[in-house]
Structures are given as C-alpha cells and as structure tokens.
Length: 439
Image (tube, rainbow, N blue to C red):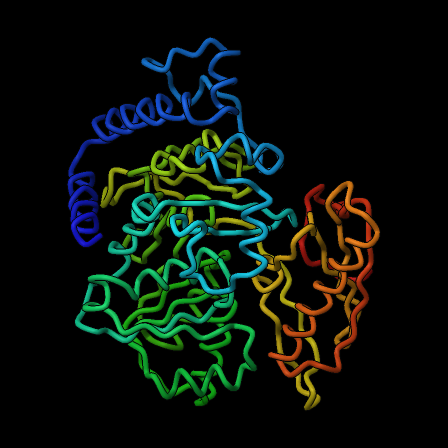
C-alpha cells in the first residue's frame, strides 16, 4: 500500500506538468482500457457496447448513454464487475456495520449515500481504486510530522468523508497526521470542549459546522488557533468563507468531494476559484448538472454518471493547474433542522445526518420540519415488501431517529413516521429537497 501511495503521488506530480492535450490523451487511453475490462465483466455495459456497436479500441465517453442515479440503483447488480456483489448482500452488510474501516467481503470499501435525491445508493471500491480518489488530499495543504487534524462530521457509518479520514490514519499517513474524529451529532458544547482539549492544527468539516465553530471562536468559547481549515460536504458560500477566515485568521480550503468519485475539486484563495481534479475523472458540464466518467473505479464503473451539482466554468488567468477552473460554489444547500434540546436551548442537527441515513428496505425518504419540537419522516419503502417487513423497517427507522435525537440531547422532540408512495418535489424549482419546511 505504501508503494502504491508513493506511486500515485508521483503520478499526480507528473500530471500537473503535462499540457491539457497530453493529459486528455492519457485519460482517453485509460478510458479505453477501462471499457475493455468492463465489456467482459459488467453485463450492463456489455449490452450497451453490443447494442450501440461501440468499438472499444477507439471509443470515447460520448459514445455511451448518460447514467442517472436512478438507473444505477435499478441496475446495480449487473453494473458491478464483482460476481458475488449484489445489492442485497451490500445492504445486509451495511445494516450490521457502522465502522468505516469494515470491508465488504474483506475486500471492498463501501460508501452509501442518499445524497440530495433521497434515494439510497451504494458505491464500492477496492483499496487500490480508493487510493486513486484519496490521493488528491496531498494537494490540500503541506504535510507535517504527526500534525494534529480534527474532523468534525458524521462519523458513525460508511460515509465518504469519514472513510477518507479513517484511511488517512493508516499506513504511512500516521507519520504525517495525528487524527481525531468528532461526531457532528454530539451536543455542540461537547464538540467545542473536545476541540479545545485537542487543539488541532487542521480542522476539517462541513461548512455549516465550521461557520458555527467560527461563531464560537468570536465569542471566546473556542480557544484554538489552527493553521488551516478545510470545508467540504456541502457548498461553501463566499460570505461564510469570509466570516470563517476573519474569525480564525487562516486560509479556508473548499473541498468538493462525493461518494461516487471521492475528491473532485479543490478551491483556495490563491486559486481565485476551484480547480476540478481531472487526473482520473472526465467532466461534462451542463446547465442543469454534470456528467462524470470515473477512470479509476473498475468495481462500480460509472460512465457519464449524472450529478445535479451545478459547476460554472471560470476563466483561468492563474494557470496553477492544467485543469478546468470553476466558481467555488458547487452543489445545493439543504436546511439545517433546529430543535429545542432537553435544556430548552436551540441546537442544530446537521442535514448530513439525514443525508446519510440508512435502513434496509427504505428506498427513499424526506424530512418535513413542523416546528422546533416536531418533524415528520416520510418513508418510501422498497417495492413488493410485505406489511410485516414494513413494520420491521418502521421500527428500525424509529430506533435510528431516537438515537440521533438522544445523542443531541433532544429526546423531547417528537416525530411521526409516515409511509408515502412518492416523495414531494419543490413546486417552485421543480427539484427535490431532502429537508423541507411545513408551509
């Protein structure tokens, strides 16, 4: 693994020295190698290649149809290249495993997400594939010796962020970092206390959470002086970035990452925007989203995979990388539910806690905020399950919601679990929101 880490790091350095034309040619060669592999291993893509008479020797991503998240979920069992990988087996694994270091079949790193679509999907990586997406982290900031690194986010499960950080604790990385993870669903006062005790040099977490930490810093409650701050997992608005930088008086790095492709972009002040990490990804930017072709994941091949993130290309006069530059804002913002805790004080539950909510046979869901003391959980169950199975799913949803509220000292907050046949779309925008307010 150490040799692979060094090899991949050197490739990143080499890529940064290539012209865009040479890098594109290199990626096209990798793309055709991937297609040659999945033609034999993936029944889904084998059929596409045959039906569309695609020549694998000269093909390009545009020869393939767009793959939506819905299509991916529906055809998961025939898209994946591992013969023993099935949606049912992965679902069973996730139901019994909360530790991000647990490997499915002792071989695959598993990430699950509902994203902002409310529909749960699984993404698997072999360790060498994962490393290709993880290695981009060396471009974030300078390495150090046992540098104290605090990650404030969702930590109890197979989520992209915490899994990236977990693997940052392993192998040669242990020389460079001393990492702690702090669960975002802890009472905010406990988060502050742990950070004060640890005194990290690097803080990484969701933009909303980092902004609250900046507020605590301004109030004198948070007494730490980090060297750098990294925000990821949700959009970092310019006004929030300014507020955070003024509070801590250090650079704020904007990290664009996803469960599907891991680290996808990096934004820094001196970049004057964000560079897409195009070493192993091919982007197609559209008005209503993007399509991404992943060149490193041979286990779950994603060719022209559609995402709803809006990326706006930006003129690049800096030329720091030979990659596409975009405006810093990516993705779509979700409401942060605010409820009264047991002490009558207001505290928040970060939306990522619901974004990464997983229950077997729960196909999709939506949260409606009814008041600061109550919410409704709309549950969309998997098709063709029995009423008995629905009762079991509802019990598991109830159990997980109680645990979330208990961790936040919000046991008095009430909720109703309601079965629905479809999830509501915002009438004004025509888009789905995972968390909605009661009108």
